[in-house]
Structure formats: C-alpha cells, structure tokens
Length: 202
Image 1: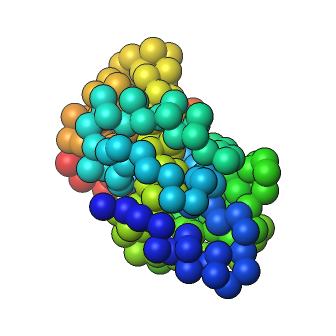
Image 2: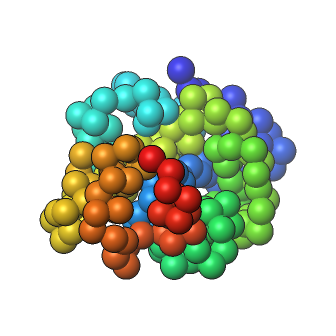
Image 3: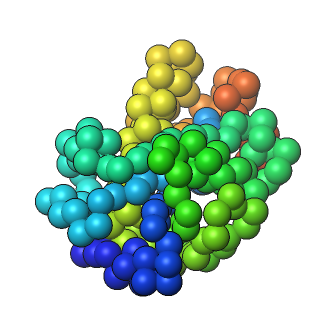
C-alpha cells in the first residue's frame, strides 16, 4: 500500500509542498494524455487509496471527489493528439505533467513523478518507479488522471460512436483497430500511433 515515505524524505530536505504526479492515457490510439498533480496533507489517510490500475472503476469514482476535497491542492492537465504527434508521447506526457504542476495553487516546490523519467519540469523532481503503488500523493494523482480521462472517453464515444471508445477507452484492442480500418481515423486520433494502418497489422 502507498505511504508517505517519499514525501517525508523530501520534506526533511527542506521542501514544504511535495506533490505527486501521474498520467493516464499514454498507450491509447486516440484522445489526449492526461496528467494530474496532487499535494496531500502530511499523513492523510484515505481508505482504499492505491494505484488507480489496482482499483475498480467504482472505487476510483468514489475516491475522486474525496481526493479533491481533502487535497491541499490538485490540478489536472492534458496534451492533445496533435501535441503527441508533434512531440512524441514521452515529451507530450512531460508537457501535460508540467501544465498540471504549474496549475497547482498553492504551488508545489518539489514533485514526485511516477515512472523513470524527469524532464523539463517547473520544480525539482524525482522519478519513482511504480510510484503509484508507493506514494500516497502519486496514487491520488493516478486516480484523478484516470477518472478524468475515462470520463473524457465517454464524451468522445458520444461524439464518435462508430469507434466504441466507451468500451476500450481508446486502447488498441483488435476490435478498435478494426473499427479504425473500417471508418478511418478522425481528428481525435494520434496519427503517429496508427502505423498498423500502413503495415496491414491485425
């Protein structure tokens, strides 16, 4: 279960507002990549808080407003499909994280990033592999990012029902790839993720 070991470590180094940062949607064929940044009160216990991927949709939805209510600060931001195509997915993810961190009020002075890469962020930062399972603030960010993106996928599904986005959330399932072949990609798609259309890959 996640705890506050990393948050506490950097507070002992003199930082006073450590945020956790995570993203959702690096792998899908369509829609933005979404990032969230969260500053939690030191030691706050939220029952069931964990890596969003380990929680049911119902549990994520239940925790979403609780995190927003209890957090000292939170922000959610994204990078568009066009930005993903222009920058590549890693750099676009960092852009979304940068936007989320910069939108925090009150501001953070240090960021814990889920993963193994830290690049061009507005505050000092540390990457933590599997951080969403180890840090409470990263776990909280993972839930905000995941729920926000899943809700966006429902909006995309309503606007473009032919792709059945509510079913697969944009991920490259066999059915999704087949629907993209059938109907062709529209403006919500990441062109750089559609090489299977040229290759004939199933």
